[in-house]
Image (cartoon, rainbow, N blue to C red; front, side, top):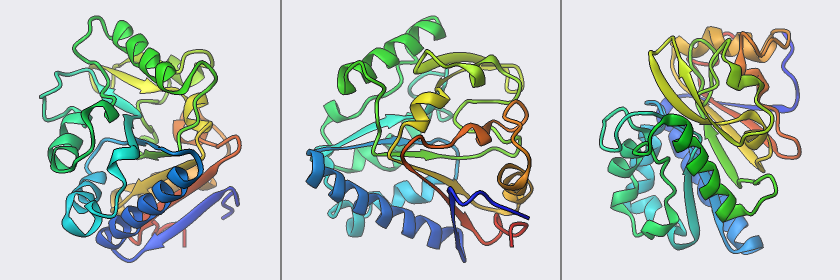
Amino acid sequence: MTINPKNKVEVFETAEALSLATAEFIIKLADESIAAVGRFSISLSGGSTPEKLFTLLAGEKYSKCMPWKNTFIFWGDERYVPLNDPRNNAHVAKTLLLDKTDIPAANIFVIPVNIEPATEAAKAYENSIRKFFGDSLPQFDLILLGIGENAHTASLFPHTAVIHEQNEWVSAVYVDEVKMYRITMTAPIINNARNIVFLAVGEGKAEVLKTVLTSAYQPEKYPAQLISPVNGNLYWFLDKKAAALLV
């Protein structure tokens, strides 16, 4: 079993240990980025795995260490549901984390699911990214990603046209598998990040992690294999159960 050395795999005993390490990693990167360029840009992921992380970062120990005033929050993808819908990734992050910090509202870039149709919402989000970064391909300091049991990441689902997108930074895609529109950053913008961290916990992710990390390159079937930074670092933070088949 061979894992590409470009993938930096770190295994933690528990999901809690993984969340603690991720919180510390984020704070370290934030401090380094602000020292270098005056700001820290991070794209959050959805799903249940980051919820422990959000709770930690909102707590007294970590929140006071995080340079919120110079931190800028984005999302890698979003379900095309109302902003106050419990399935909305930004709603979850705001409830568990952002509403409990002193981050300026202007530093939070929510995907505008209130714009119709979904294609226009995607264009609007791309425009907000362009306004922040400029017209050259943006370089986030950190992008957090999850991975589904079907090997999707962000909203790059198997056998969807968006996994081949090379021009748009943000696309709307109807995912028949979940019967809804999703809005997602595309592979080129993700791969331009300085740091990318996949977070995965639980035995339910073991099989897909083995497939994605050790199988032949088949991004049509396993879109997570598309993620390969151009000049950045790629980390996989896994708990022991998720990494069980990699050992």
